[in-house]
Image 1 (cartoon, rainbow, N blue to C red):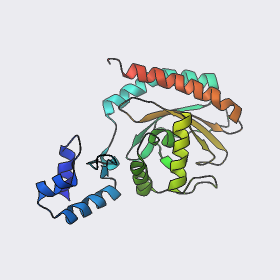
Image 2 (image 1 turned 45 degrees about the vertical axis):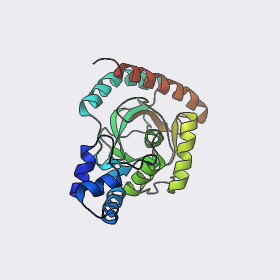
Image 3 (image 1 turned 180 degrees about the vertical axis):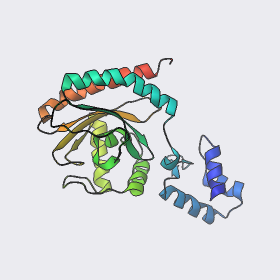
Image 4 (image 1 turned 180 degrees about the horizontal axis):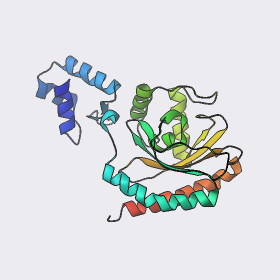
Length: 239
């Protein structure tokens, strides 16, 4: 199995089942069994179009230099957005199939909804998780859900993989994701993705649903999208 992982790791484009059997001398059935186990554990993932195997989410982490640059660029923009909206603003990224909160600027209000910097959350119950995995293929998403599970936090938490995939289709269509009391009762969160960047990241605004009514969501999405586009543009320029 280590030989199989070494082959996958050494290839930037991915390896086929035939390549694994040829390079390791394993019978095809044995190689396929190993790859299947590795895929179930998210050590490798298979491209649905090419059937090539690449390193999976268990080995994937954002570039630390790129992440630190993103955080530096985001700080002033997110504090201004927090001040404009009076709500908690977050920058999160995807690591190992989980959402990691990189920056959190809390609302000044006494009643607020805020995670802690470094806190990890699951993709199925968070707006950030939804918007960041919406661009991934079905097999990749199912692999993440199988790896971390879909625990029920509230009566509104999505706990069925098919229902979650249907939710992601809606996220792709409208361009943003929402958490409607799915992670915490009475909480509402709106998120957009940073598109076209090497780091799977997103921005979100979170608050008690009484402070973020549904008719304010379009305005929040507009402002989040504006900041996301500006950050994407800055990330594409020389450091």
